[in-house]
Image (cartoon, rainbow, N blue to C red; front, side):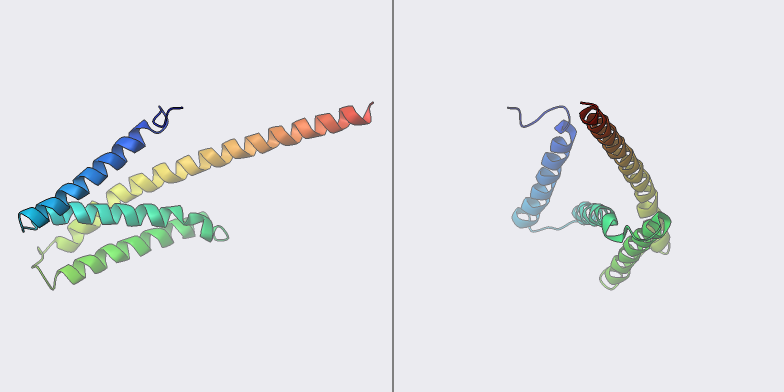
Length: 150
């Protein structure tokens, strides 16, 4: 049995890479006793990626609402978190005059791309599941008809 196959090869590479980068950041901070800007940026990117994937994965909890409302609610929750992080960090470090705008763009553009990929994939999976259900129902009704004819 193969643990790593064609379907999970890229996700496994991404997980291994992420773990190695996080360990590198942690070890550098411990050994060199320095926590630089690039380390902070990488950790922030990891945190925002984690948070975004978590929020997107929770769409099923809001399935009673229209999809557009769910997507907007997820985005506003995430961009609000990003802006709150920037605001809190402004107490510790001076911000560039365009810091909020830059972070808004730096988060929004990848988020929109990721959300589109996520929801297109979700619709594709739903379509496949519906097709499978349709085939099962058709098969079941054909078997019931053949049983009645006997």
